[in-house]
Length: 395
View 1: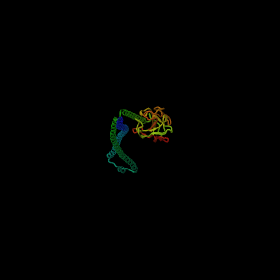
View 2 (view 1 turned 90 degrees about the horizontal axis):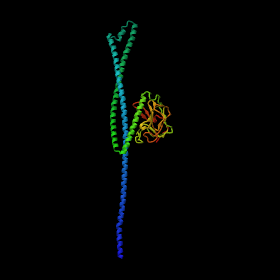
View 3 (view 1 turned 90 degrees about the vertical axis):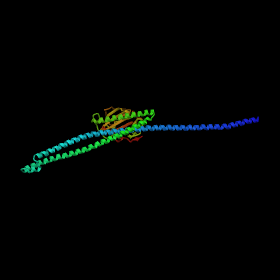
View 4 (view 1 turned 45 degrees about the vertical axis):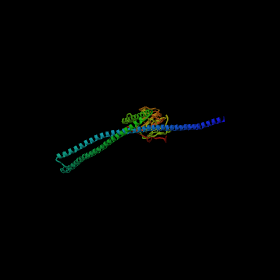
């Protein structure tokens, strides 16, 4: 009996010896599998972050290319305006030269006629006229007559020389302007090549986006196009009011300093004038204004003037523009509303609107711009250069 019990104990011990390593091995394998899964998960998350970062980088590149395209288009437009201005000047110069040459020929013909007349009268010289005088009275009379004739001849000669010099100067200026036109046209061609290259690069980048990202980019492009159209409309209006000589524009005169368009307690600048990182999809990266951080507060006319825009204007939302005379304009965007109408004459400090958050905007603020123009060379300037303002805080 004892032998039987001993045999059972031995068998049990043998089973334990084989089972314990097996259990231990299975636990280690599970731990290894867990660690491997965790590692794979971390790798996947890293890959996801990398993909997201790459997509963000693509969107950033598209934004930069959009800014480049806008810059090239602006530069091409400025060059074309310059070419138009030069070609108009060239046409005027050619007319001026033709008139100068005509006047020079008339003077030369007059001088020739006088010389021919003297020759036909027997080649009489001034000395012969004096010697032929019968007495001292005749001599004095002839002397003064000769002096007048000589002076008249000299005036004709001097006039011919002056016209020739004026003609030569005009021709040199004409040649210079023609060279400028040729150089500007070559520059336009180069800018167009850069523009097309930037557009092609942008299309390639857009093609790599997801459907959702493509839709976002389409919205951005639509917003940019709306802002471009608004800018073109603003430029056209400023040109029209300036060229009308006061008809349609402000008949007063800008005095050189604009008042702060808000209460002086509102002095936080959230976006400066010039190049910046676009704060929101569709917002301009070349900021032609300053943004003042305010929320639904009164906006005042910074100088006397006449309202030429008071309506919704694409990406600028509710927008007001005032003509202050002498080619100076101020513009106010993203307004919640306005209390003036187009054609109204306003006074310095008069409330014209309330700041807001309309159009393409990241939040309530006042978009404030100063525009110098009325011609093909119109441009925006930093409002702080022309505006009396409080001590500012930059956010």
